[in-house]
Amino acid sequence: MYRVLAVILCAVCCVAQSPQELLKQAVTAQQSGRLDDAIQIYQGLLAKYPNIALLRSNLGAALASKGRYAEAITEYNRALKTDPNPEVRLNLALAYYKAGDLDNAIAALKQVHAERPSNLQAITLLADCYLKLGQNKQVVALLTPVEQQYPNEASFTYLLGTALVRDGQTAKGQVIIDKILRQGDSAEARLLMGTTKYMIADFSGARDDFQKAVELKPDLPDVFAYYGLALMTTGDQANAKIAFERELKSNPNNFEANLNLGALLRHDEDYDQALKYLHHALIVRPADPGVRYQIASIELSQGKIQDAERDLEKLVRDSPDFLEAHVTLATVYFREKRKEDGDRERAIFAKLNAERQAKNEIAAKPAQ
Image 1 (cartoon, rainbow, N blue to C red):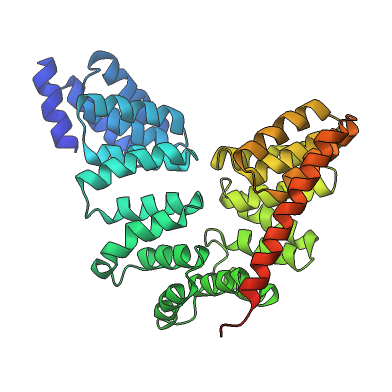
Image 2 (image 1 turned 90 degrees about the vertical axis):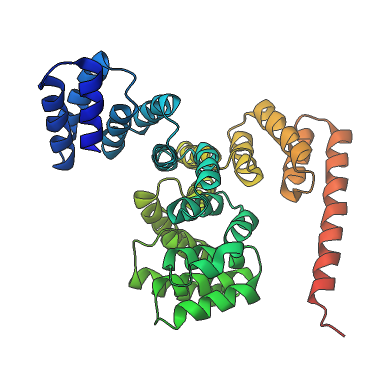
């Protein structure tokens, strides 16, 4: 990389050593962790030679290493205008991913995957983005066709198994779990087993598996979020809060942790803190009905009746089968003395609830 940049600088500037020496200093500073020095030198070079894509890419990498993702994204995009390099686009996707902008990360990764279909990093990062957005079917569709190409890639196997389990494909997910278990007990296998048990309402069994996963590998992504879910479902709200907070320390964009910590804080009437986490959850998954319902419920509790009415009406239009939203909207209408509207929403709830119960009864019947 350094040699390529040096040649380009020689070609564009026709000055003997000065830009090359500056470049050498920047690369050395970047490699030794003196990122502020590297950034300053790159910016100085780009002020004179703004159209050198590799310089911009290096600057983007230095900025990303400092956690300055918005600036890194700008530099990567500028570099791509001059040279649409897939490796730079992959770095752009990583910057979007680390900034929590998963939609743009997915857009960039799709393009990288189209250009470099065998790039495993692009495949697994794209799958992880889908997984974080709850798009489990997309993960399965992406990974299943190439599963045989990566039989020994642990991250690939884990992502596919997680998506299968979360999508309710527990039999196929169990095959992945068994494959991981053959390599010995692990946090990844425990998290997958716990998720499987959680999906079939074995909440205490799920909690035990998640606890073991936490003990084996506390830095495993999502492990404290799912442990918190199991704790919350089994009635231990105090420790569930601690688990969600622990997840968010290392993974601030975890959707489940933000949503459920917000819900618990709402239950405690700590509305300002609850809204902080709920709004962040909405950034991760825009328009998610569960988050929108929690926010509207807080508005109602705060006496912001018109705000709650507006948000709940939008919610039932977008998600007409959301039972709780109809109940709460009915409450809003009754408070506003709009009995006819309240009765209508209550009737919708009764109808939807009866349909849900009938489906549950059918599902619970043993096969003949």
